[in-house]
Length: 342
Image 1 (cartoon, rainbow, N blue to C red):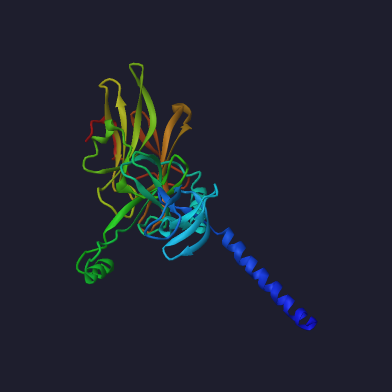
Image 2: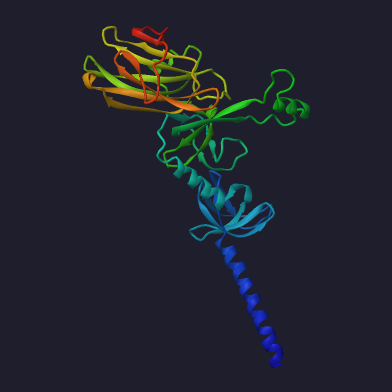
């Protein structure tokens, strides 16, 4: 008996430890609620009672799983069953935190209002993981843009789908859609479909889009007109379609004419493969004093990105050469003295 006991004891201990480890792992599994709000059930059955509710982004402890449901416990100690489609893993949660940290110091390029409730995705793709939502009317900061293929409708012919993706059948290409990397007022960061947002463009200049899409606007300076401060704007514009290989195609500077009390186009430059971010600041130019400056980034045919700096000495906009840059062949885009929206 002693020999049997000595032989079995290590096995019993090992089994107990393994069982304990399994128990600990189960106790420590954490997931996060991806639905705006969901209720907990007391059992997985057609008839059940509600034991509590959970909200978006809330952490829950996983106690067990059963097909489509997970047995969870909230931070307040409430147990219940929750559909697994309302949960994302801690890995997904950590990826969102990493993304937020990566863009913490990135300059805001625009602001927008969400015109519908929508998901915040980890990548600019509809099938990408999502955790948080933005509510209708939420104000968002916009950081970066990207494009991805738009999912085809369910039941689309496989032959047509393959043709579009391969570029066959003439000039057919896969339909694309644009996304913004956003930060909401709670500090959540992720990708949102651009068509779900109304980008904040001042009404006084939005009317001069001329069929173009205004990507973003920046206040570069202010002037005083009858004791009222009036902003002067740099605006980024592009063709009104998704999936373009650049963020903007044109820049336009609107200055305020204090004699005629109206906005005029002081500068326009077209045919740019512009990429974000754009930065606005001030710089000292000796005799001219402190002037507003803005820097844009332009991509060439090989994909190289170079910076272009401009200064505004109202109403004149001039290019400022950076180290190593040569003087442009012409400056035909500059409109001397301003021009009325042409």
